[in-house]
Amino acid sequence: MTDIVQTLDEQADTSAATRLVWKHGLIAAVTWAAASIVTIALPDTIKWGSVGLFSGLTGAGAAILLVLAFTVHTLGKTGKTIEHYGPWLIAVGVWFALWEFTTAKTGWLPKPFFSPPHGLLNVYVVEFDRLIVCIGYSLRLWGLGFFSGVTVGFLLGIALGWSRSFNYWGMPILKLIGPVPASAWIPATFYFFPTTFDASIFLVALSCGIPVAILTASGVSSVNKAYYDVARTLGADERFQILKVAIPASLPHVFVGLFMGLYYSFAILVVAEMLGAKFGLGWYIQFQTAYSGYANVYATIVIMAVLCSGIVKLLFVARDRLLSWQEKGLI
Amino acid sequence: MNAPLKSLLSFAGLGRKRQEPRSSRTVPADNARRNIALDIKNVSHHFDIAGSPLAVLDNVTISVKPGEFVALLGPSGCGKSTLLRLAAGLDTPSRGSLLEEGQPIDGPDPSRLLVFQDPTLFPWRTVWRNVATGLEARGLLDTESARVDNALKLVKLDKFADAYPHQLSGGMAQRVAIARALVNDPHLLLLDEPFGKLDSLTRMTLQAELTKLWQEVGFTAILVTHDVEEALLLANRVIVFSDRPARIVAEFEVDKPYPRHRDDTDLVHLRQTILGQLGIAND
Image (cartoon, rainbow over all chains, first blue to last red; front, side, top):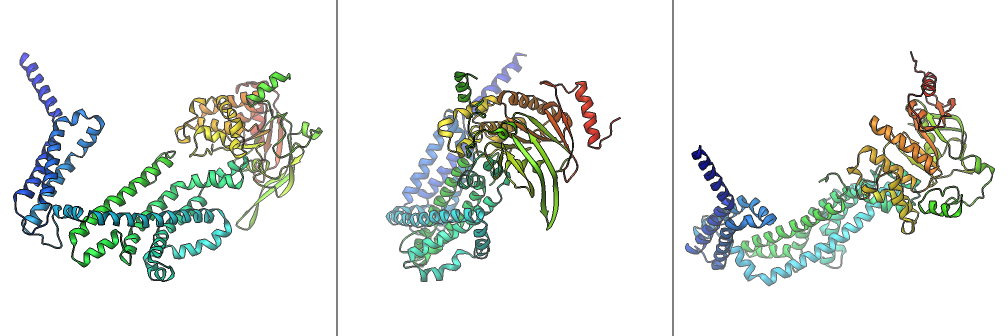
């Protein structure tokens, strides 16, 4: 009897102990340390630069993970989030180690088409100033194009959805032109606009304005007619019906249009920048490809991935706030 | 009514309909206005369905006195709801005329409000903002927002002011719809099968609540229903319609005090008579 109690106690003790140690964190620390050691201990077949920095960063990552493995349970909600990504952290360490090994250390994946992680890191170190300028140019072009396109598209969509005669004349044109990829307009726009910058803004605006216009129009015209009946009997004039009924009711559709427009605008942004911009991430990729700077190309793609997914995330946050009245999200 | 009580009632947003002039009209009270709340004169109506006319109302004449509760009873789809839409000013009749207190009805007006079978609350607005819609549309919300709170108290939903419609039960949503109408102090409340989609227990509760509101607030009510029992529980007068196109086939005064009981022998008897009128045999 006492034996059983004792073993039960021991089991309870060990399980409490294992709960206090974050196993995935420990393993991740090992894989990150491996990546660090592979980077620093084995010689590069061709020099890439920033070896010490990458080894140091992954080593520091390993150290942090090691500390977290014993302290993560004290961090509350943040700790829970970190624990959730444990398997991912392990995989990233393994990925870095293999990536280092197959590129810089053995040359199995040859230069210039493949680059080790410290090669990418070296691009950020060496090209920092130029990349910052390029990010600024791209964001300016995208911002001007996206916001003007979305504004015009939204207003046009409301007019198309609300006014019968506007719909009669406008909708067939929009339906005809809408499916044409914005990139097909490039030759014409570069001729019609005074500068390539203006033309590029127009192309980005066109790419996102059309889906927003179409979805807004369909949203406004599919609003339950009973809402207008209620609003009219309550004394609402046309202005009130548009601003306080049609627009909020069609907002779920508008957001579908915004998400579509966002992806189209990223696509056309890069194409437009490759065709005669002086700076910008698209231009930078084009420029570096000409010199076989594939490490620079990959480094830029990583920046684009972070920027674009960040903007998508922002739009999701905006949607969740504005559409919190919905039972469930549509997207 | 003495002056302090009057001002107290009007502060509460109640009891003001007889004193307050209509939003768009300033016609002084005359005989017609005092004696007839809604006058439906020889109204016929048809819809165009795929090019051919479909008659829905056939020469309907009804006169509703102020403060009266009239039930329009008839088979589903006979055209009763169309009559309510005409009274609300949402459609114009093919023939005949409708007058509110002697004035022709030429469009929607917050003095005549419609409550639908579906609550049709704006899902993007909280309960409070739904109820506030009418005042907001007329630019009165800044000065008279207390009326919204009072209307919510009236339907016992003041604790749900910040809820969104999808968080409400069917009965609560319909009470919000009633509050959204009553906050505007309508002369005429047009109810289009307002309890049709509710479960029977909720329906009974809301029927009792509606009777109380009608007695307290004193609006004129027209209720479209196909439920004979509901008509007899709520109305002073029951008007029975035929199948489409709707004609008036019978009219019954229900002179019974409130609250009424469904088992009241006179009402049970009347119910049998009306069901006979509707062509449903009773054994």
